Length: 171
Image (cartoon, rainbow, N blue to C red):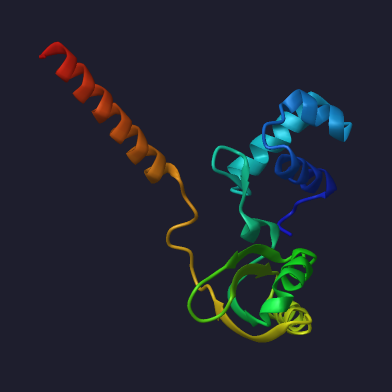
C-alpha cells in the first residue's frame, strides 16, 4: 500500500467523510498533533496520494491498481435489491442505471486481477443478476473532471451580464 500507515489511512478516510475538515479538527478527531496532521497532509499531497487540491484520493497510489467497468443485465423486479447488494461491496465505486445494452453500469476497483475475479464472482451471485460484461481500464487519459463545465458556465454568465450591461448603456 505504498508506505501508508494506519495514521495516513485514517487521515484519508476522514477527508472522504468530511472533505471540508480543517487541519485542527482533523488532528483533534484523530488524536494527533496539529503539526503531525499538517505534515502528513503535505506528504500525501507531494506523493500524489491526495490530488485535486488535497481532497481527492488516487486509489492507485493506495494500492488499487485495477479499474473495471461492468455492465450488468438484471431482472427488473430485482433492480433495487441488486443495487442494494452492490452498495455492500467495498470495491464498487459507482453504479448508474443505463439505457442500451444492460441495465446497470458499475465502476469498480481492485488491488489485482485475483481480487477483481473475486468481486466479479460476488456480483454474479447477486439474486437478480442475469449476466455481466466486464471491460478493464488500461489507462486513464482524462480523469473525472468538472472544471471545463464550470468555466463554460461562468463564461456564459459573464457574457450575458456584459450583453445586458451593453444593452442598458445603449438603449
